[in-house]
Image (cartoon, rainbow, N blue to C red; front, top):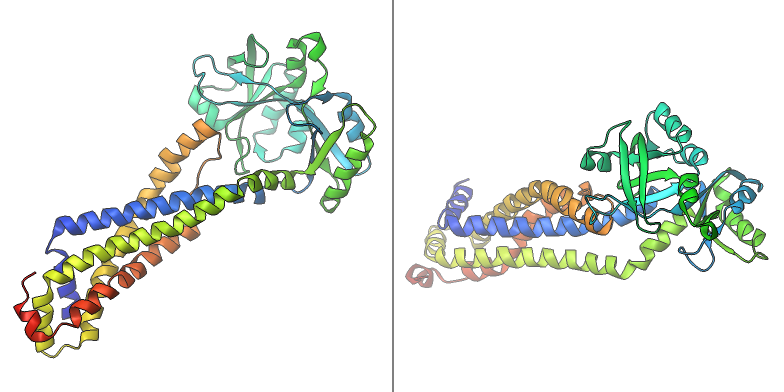
Length: 386
């Protein structure tokens, strides 16, 4: 017990150095959890994607359009429960032109029937279906713009110039990570009527709910075969496979993030090691006295490791606490507003891992300077002036 009290007192030898070390460790932990949160967010986006939907687009690409009658043909196919057509709306708030709004025009009734992850009272969803100018708004956007149910909203078209007037009929929250948190949904018919004649009756996407999730790949192929002889051919995937392909496009980046998170733990190790090296140099006479009194080197090494472990534990705790407002607050808002990413959530597993590993890494960081200091002969230690 005396040795542990002595280790605690050693931290007071240079309070400024101890505080700076704790803060440096905390910053490393915050950076580690930020990287893990971004990586986990992409993975969570895929895992939460429903397995009972397939998504069709034009074979050439997402920016190409298909005839709207494709929706009815898909809906009539065996194994399809519902089908919905949609188009990219391209809307922005006239007073917040830099803020990204994910706006999609949808066929209202099948849309609200299929998308159970967008949660709102049934009467609000019914109001959206009934009102041609109705607007479904995420709770995050409603809060940001100060919108309430029944408000008249003016948005500006980017693909279709002009002012669009909507009535907020539904304010929902999304239970699916990375889907709909920053979105508005409007009636496809309302948008279609505003388009030039040559651009009307076209859609960019068909989302279909299937009866048997195990037949997703089979039905996706059947849809493409059905339209194979048409001028506008389709490319259909299971919804989860589609999201997995998006994440796969960033696979190299995610791997780089994983490597970076490990390197950050290395920085944490070096930070504590540097502090303990300076601390042990200053306490060599003290260590020599303890050796002269009969304390074995392994016990003195345990005292030094305990000092380092305490610094690591304190820095890890501060880092985990700070990660909540930093990662889930400031960093999350920045990425949502500038890159349309899903809100970040600090993964509990890595947070607990950081809290547990910080003192372990601290103790490991003390091994080299600790062994060096405890191996000095008693007479040399007592004469040392560090």
